[in-house]
Image (cartoon, rainbow, N blue to C red; front, side, top):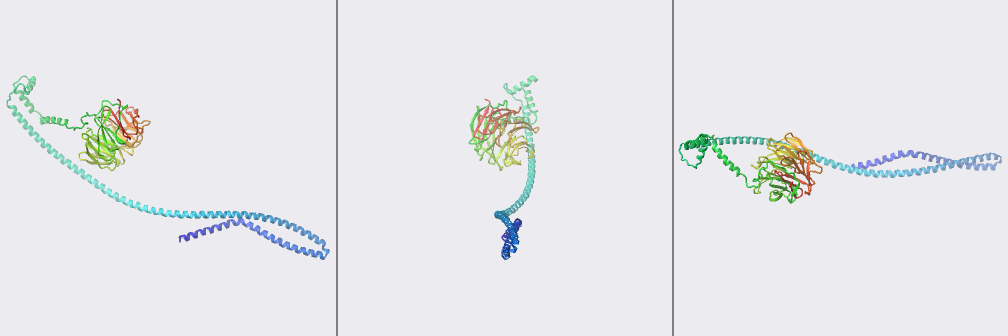
Length: 604
């Protein structure tokens, strides 16, 4: 039915076009037809007149022969006929001329008609092509309508699924809230029970202490009443002499009784406290392990910071890219982590790095390294979604912290060394308890976390969305956030944790004063370019310098006080610098690159 309607439509269209052409072109040919008809009429008239003139000629000749009387009349008639013939001849000539012109016009009009016919054929071919295109477009339109309907159905299905998931999420969120409240209540009850138990134990210990002290005092009093022989080299004589210096000479029994009296007049627990202190000092002196780090002197600050000028030791650190570097708290060990899935330890001896050992167990490249404050443990974050802890005395893997759903880009010890904070590409931060080896809290940050630093109760994180976020560990909430002009790649704190150093992909380093929450100093240099989203920069131990590596392999050092570039070291690295670490002693600076090379710097 649709094809028959289409055939009728194009036939009707052609008929209408022909009628239109007939109406348009008829006016052009009407004058020609009229002239042609007039020419035919004149030709017929000429034939009639010629025939009549012939008849009259024959009649005149016969009349001339019949009567000579009519000669004069015949002459005049002959003249009149001659004139009429001449006039007719002229009219005939004029008509022939017009006929030639009209024939030429007819030829031209025929050519125009043929041209118009060709144009009509071309237009018909184009119309046919357009009709085919229209049919194809109609088919495409039908296909698109069908696709649109399918997409609308799929969209509706997804919307329904989203609504169902939203309802499920709300239910789970409510369940989580109730579970958290129940957990908090249980923790509170547990803490109350523990407090009661501690109070009971303290009371029992106090009773036992008082009982033992009373018994000891009684024994001392009984011993003081008994006379004892005193030798010359006895220590009690020294006490008597010392006491006699202030009170004069007395009998041998008096110093002893005085000493006993002094002992009996001590506050309760004094003797036990002294004993406890003695054993406490022994225990603290022997509590450290055999780790080489624990034998190093603590380095809370440094006497002198040396600004690096020379590459003391250039060495191949890993089989592939080296991502991170960190000095131990005592500055004697240097740890590097690379894409070869290992953490390597180097001992810094006389300006050189000697291989000390390797920590294995990671299933992907190492992204971050941190030591605890005593140098007994090493924490490393990895691309296999986990963080790991090794002991430094035996290089054994102790803990593996899993739970992130993306690469762990940074992990740090808190100041109590009993908790760890990790930040991941999955846009979350996790707080881990090393005693229970479980994740205590998970916070959704909203953007990939590239680096973390910690104070006592605050965690600062740098993110892919150009923001530095400040988290309260106790409240699990953002205290504040600060937006920079580029993706944040690195964070570092100065020695008193009052200033925060940031590095971002706009190739600018900034120092943020944590007390006023304002940017104190900005560092940049011509040629300095941040080479990756995990490029690490560092404070000097005294906070007077900052150092960072550039994508061209140059090490830049700025003066914090002046804000100006102090020096540029650009002759040793062959690729972009990934990380820089300044030793806590202030003597050395270590840098690692996208290649396999590490460099130890100093001013020696």
